[in-house]
Image 1 (cartoon, one colour):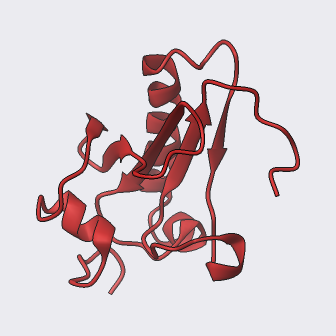
Image 2 (cartoon, rainbow, N blue to C red):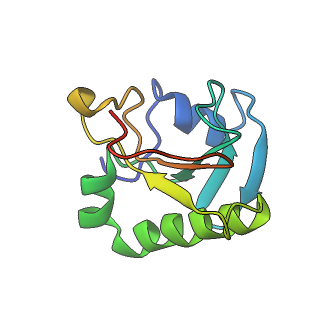
Length: 119
């Protein structure tokens, strides 16, 4: 069921405190932590605390929480001092797009030049 924690979901386990993560921000509805395989000097994941499979499901099922994720991504950029030089917010949706954890999450990337297209 949408929003309910999934026992086999890595990000649900991080939210529950069962798996450690380097948390950099937390709100009532979101959690932000450093990616364990960073692709840029700043690489932070922002997730909804409630389980939603991907960005499309999050937007359809909980649009206010989707907005919270985006707002927190902007706050991460400010906190990490990448706001002025630019940063990227990426949602991978589906395995073919590189999504490996099926819990909606935004990648906040910055701290170096980011080329387009990304690959």
